[in-house]
Length: 211
Image (tube, rainbow, N blue to C red; front, side, top):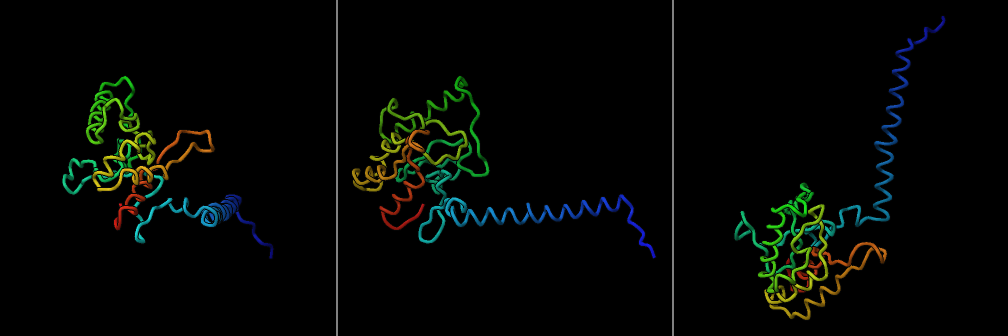
């Protein structure tokens, strides 16, 4: 008895279904597993978020900045904690789910007033003249999550941190020097200090505690 061929439309649908299953297995399962395996084998730290740990617990990421504030004293308007090196301002408050800048242009009067107020506040906080405050201390990054600050801003904060923690300014300055990063590949970008790494090293050097 001759076999009745399937209708053309049904054959096309079955072929499409087979292609869907094959490419789902390849691109939805096989490829992610391959990439994950390569990342875990060769770049495990970066693949897992470049996490910083203290006492067996994750306390932050080297890739995302943090606020170091006195939140417990004033939750609605947290103040910078003098015991820690401070990051640059962030429009989103260093919320990883709210990345972005203020989008205010250089001629915007709101930005001008904000920068002026920040400069006065940072100068008073660190005990330096307003003219000595570095630009990155009063302006945010494009992402609002950048953990890097300039060496000038890091060194500016040494005396305040040392005084607040009753540590030697020489020791704190040496700690900053050990966390200086040069230009990427020797010529890209600017030298910087990762403030999250620096504050974790400060916590380790000062004694038990975490960020």
